[in-house]
Image (cartoon, one colour):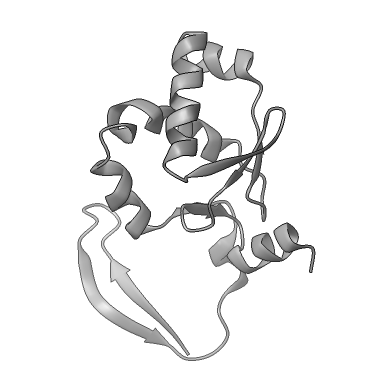
Length: 133
């Protein structure tokens, strides 16, 4: 059994807060979306280092996140051009995201998103891909 909420697509208002579907979960639910978790949103909105600043780089990273993975490759030059920011700003924002535990550096230009932040695709598959199961 799965529990869902019915939401008005135009207003975002929750019409039925606890809707239950019996049966198999439709496979299309996980396709084409980046799911950002509510607990994480609360953390970043209240964080002075992130809100209105590094959040722009974070959203850029989320847009470039591979399906079913938490690993992101970011080429600084391209990110700076697209975000219209300086090299110094890029690295300051990267440092803020790292200090806050939102991302960790894996290798040159490669970062791993904290799994509590967001996922593109299927969370279970993303975790399996990260641990090599």
